[in-house]
Length: 113
Length: 114
Image (cartoon, rainbow over all chains, first blue to last red; front, side):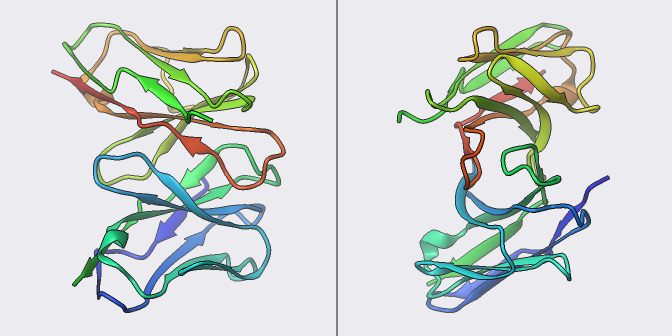
């Protein structure tokens, strides 16, 4: 059973702060890692993906991957109230980048003004 | 690129009835996925297709569930003899083999079994 664990929420940060979301996974064979954002009542929306160890930055978002520790994180800088959502970590099984994804339960983030 | 389209958006059905959902993927995507999501949980994999071939099916998918993608374009997911435990959001996603960057979800079909 492949497991994806996310830090328990909810997470609440003030506007302008850095929000840090964490995820660990059990399958050492996982090669591709994704962060999805899901607003209440909506479907997941892909915001970041990462394949290589290290950091990947896209605007206010930074994904960090450490395969040796089986750990992936998402940092949101200058958090905005519009970032309030549930963030889902997802990983693939094996080397395929487009096979099934295993999702965590999500971390609910609230950014208060 | 018109996105992934799902129909209907909402479905309320009585226990024991059959329901069918439709998904139209992004046109150039050859892979299509079905997931199910309940409140407070992440999406749970059901099955996926590459073109018209069903490549993987979750063991969680009972024999009351069947999915088809007859011409490698749209797909249908049928649930027979629905149970209250089937109440969930059913999500369809599409992607292209070899395309880096994950896949795109549709808006989902919310099923309520009463």
